[in-house]
Image (cartoon, rainbow, N blue to C red; front, side, top):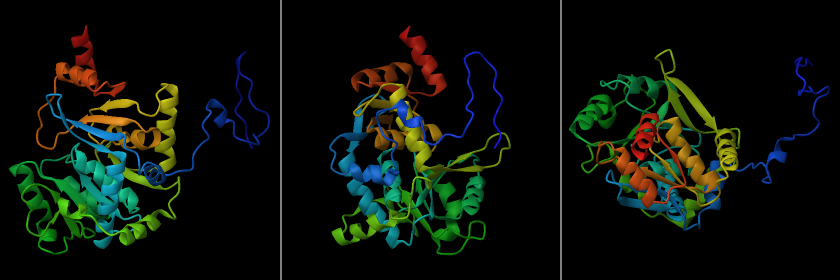
Length: 327
């Protein structure tokens, strides 16, 4: 075994391998072995708000408690299992910040499947084909907000909607849509939320039996410097301990209200799920399902004040605008 030679008056390198971990001494909380699924089950009776969704004018649109999140996730998980989604299967997710994306992630966690957070990097949508093929996505869940998105979905997924295999993405079997007018051949997201039996829900609970802290809970994408997709499986232990460490370093505890304006399909937005479950924060964000209107600094500051936000995770440009406006 080699040791790094370190110099400095205040540095004393170790001479022998450590016999036990010293990391726990930084906290009174023991390092957990709970997965995101375990954390979610622990909160199944909590009436605390998990997510609050705001309108662009800073008024409240809706909220979901941990209890309702778990209940709807169970129903969604049963429906996904009936579609043939198995533990470790990949499910594509193209949904803006809204209640549906929260239920989707909770449901996929319950049935042991892996959400793959996708975004349209090209107007043609051809990059989505590549990502679906690369990650062997079996089902994709999409939101359609306007006619342009509707036309794009028809163009990209026409063969699958006609119950044909698309050689560009041969693993894809089902299209689930969040929209008022569901396309022929697609599945209505709302139909997957119908109340199901206790027996079926109990069967779902067995799907996480072999999932540990070292297993991924979702897959994120980054283009990096190459311009090509890089797929980043995020293990339970990484995201959970990151959130717990953040809470300790910032002295925020259960019940903290966090505002996060980042899309939940981005790494900086997906952490909202971890902060909610690992730290029991209430996450406040703007519902952008019906609008793409950007909220200005005045609106964000009003939202932060009205919702009694303790900590805000903002886009850099928005943080700068809020800072200038506050001064």
